[in-house]
Amino acid sequence: MMSPVQPMACCEKPREKFLQQGAQAVTDQDLLAILLRTGVKGHSVLDVSRSLLRSLPGENLYYLSEASVADLCAIRGVGADKAVTICAAVELGRRIARQRVKQNAPDFSTPQAIAEYVMEDMRFLPQEQLRAVYLSTKNQLIAVRTLTIGTINSSLAKSREVFRFAIQYNAAAVVLVHNHPSGDPSPSSDDIAVTRQIAQAGHIMEIPVLDHIIIGDGIFTSLCELGYV
Image (cartoon, rainbow, N blue to C red; front, side, top):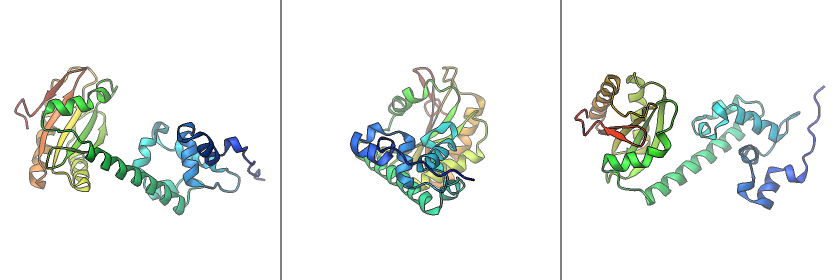
């Protein structure tokens, strides 16, 4: 027989905690519970939010931005209504972030500016990550998306991802960025080949790939400056 859900003390209730102690006092699990509102028979709302959080790689909220309604509905206690609420909250946050970036967007017209923007975030990553920096017609930042984690050696899938997001963001141009965990930003033959193939796809799509910047340990290499783009 399934045990009944035990009532939570007031200090454990996410909404009350948010009201009394502020947003900084609540955990990721609490925030998800606030969006979920209720649990299901035998599972409190915190149980459900814990399951949702554990379903994300590394329990990292970043991956919630990539979850679909169907993905969320696969979690026990998360039906269509709750899944839509969560996806809507993620989309709202994404739109707010875009507007904030547009209002404070730096000029990304040089490799130096882009490298400085991503350097501290990427220089110590343990694995290679390929990211795309999406720019407006005035070379201002629209968004940055992580496309792949791992060795940069296959261009077809990456091209699709690069330009799928470019269309989504209505970007005028793209700059590719990836890191070398060794700290040496010298391009490999794979780096050059992938860059050229994605740039060729951009030419066809009429969304130019302006550069591919490789991040090392406090230093960077611009494939455009080397003549590979």
